[in-house]
Length: 112
Image (cartoon, rainbow, N blue to C red; front, side):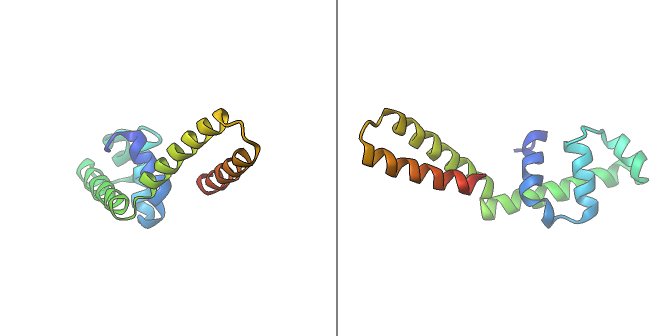
């Protein structure tokens, strides 16, 4: 879970738990695809300082996901919604179909 897309996703879910500085450096690295040298030059610290900050922030984000599991549960809900939608497409009974549609709408309202 260390590729930039996953880090960006972790930032979206848990970025508020980081310091402003950590968020700024993480966004530069993950979202703007800046190198350690580019970030270091821009913010006026050493490459090692940037690396240390990014490593600490990444560890903190992973720890939050490990404990809270928001991304895991979001993905799980999306999978359930897709399965329910597929079942809904195959159902012809009016009452059952209405109940399934209502359940699907409820799930979709949670994952938006």
